[in-house]
Length: 165
Image 1 (cartoon, helix red, strand yellow):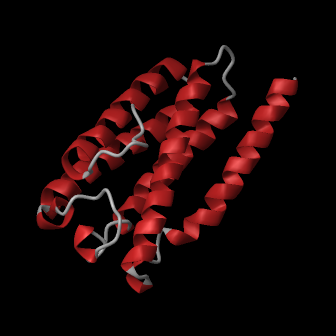
Image 2: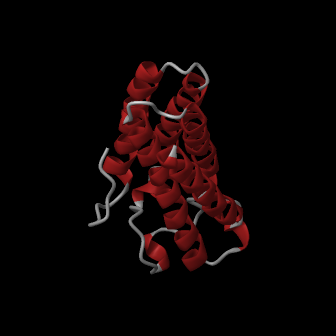
């Protein structure tokens, strides 16, 4: 019981952080490159955190289904918001510290295609989370992670804090 309460408190804390960062996702058109990049990095951490939490929850002997649905929903929501994270002028040419490669803007069609593939996989993930088929969900989480990695390999420079799938 104590573990369940601790997990519930963690869920509430994570949800509070997400609610506080969400407004950053759609403000790109009025923000400076520094602000956009700061928000993008924060949002990427939240997306990666939801991925890690879902992965870890699925490994537990008795995963909590409400947490699984919540983390899958967070992943899906963050993925939908990503379309706002890379506005023109928020790349390396801005002079700001970013891991986004300039090819995001010079090869936008390829970037958008990889993003669309990732978005489709997150939608599947979210749908499977409602079935409570955790084996299928774990498989789809791996597929979703690989769609994410495909874009990272092409359009992101590696850093020392890179999340491993």
